[in-house]
Amino acid sequence: MEMNMLNLSGFGGLIILALDIWAIVSVVNSGNSTGSKVLWVLLIVFLPILGFLIWLIAGPRARNRAL
Image (cartoon, rainbow, N blue to C red; front, top):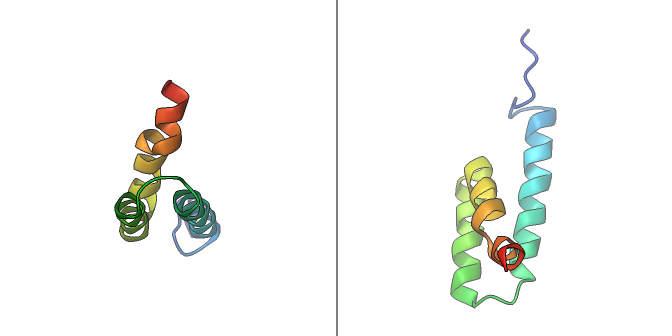
C-alpha cells in the first residue's frame, strides 16, 4: 500500500478539509462585498486544493500584506 501525504481519503484529506474550512470562514468574516465572498467560497468548495491555494495567494489578506 502506497503512503501518500495527499491521499484524499485519509489524513491528507482531513488536512485539506480543515484548510478549506479555515479559508471559507476567513472569506465570510472579511469585509468584502457579498458577491466577492460568494465567488471565493464557490472557488474553494468546487476546487478544494487549487481554490485554497489561489485564495492564499490572491485573496483579500494577500492584498493587505502587499501594502
